[in-house]
Length: 237
Image 1 (cartoon, one colour):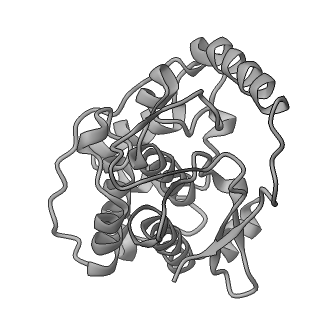
Image 2 (cartoon, helix red, strand yellow; image 1 turned 45 degrees about the horizontal axis):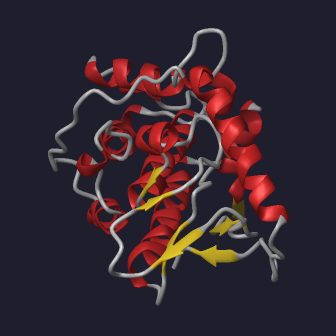
């Protein structure tokens, strides 16, 4: 609600956005085993009493060696957050997490949920709306009105640019999470980020594909025992 949104100030939101980026950067590039989370979304980010973000629920995560550039796998995750190349073809790289992170950034900036925006209008409604306002430089129409002030206009635009860069249709055009951390830490709002139109997918058209893949994965999993907990925690440093 509006009162809770006001409590989550702009500075707090930026800290959360940066903390999540640092956690993903560690998973992708600094941990002993490269890990792709596959289900980055708002409900999988927990905040401690100091609003430090913790990435949770690694039940869908995949690890692969340095000699692998990608995996081809069954589609699993949350509609609205899944990268187009992964949703359509099961092509999995770290850039799938980058895409999900970009959607999450836009949610934090706007105060709106992506999942609640996928319905009769089809596609990534939140992404479409943000992109259209961004092209018109209408920052005040993008940011959560409960916390927006003209004094943070340039900062908001910078973070929105980063979020949109993470949702580029071509996975190769998306930054690495290490680059995202660098951009967020720089506090330079004059850095030009080249953007092309983001993908506008009819997510509902892929719903049957996703359900079919989930059924296949469940059948495969039933033949194997899985040890250990599927819930883990990683804090942004």
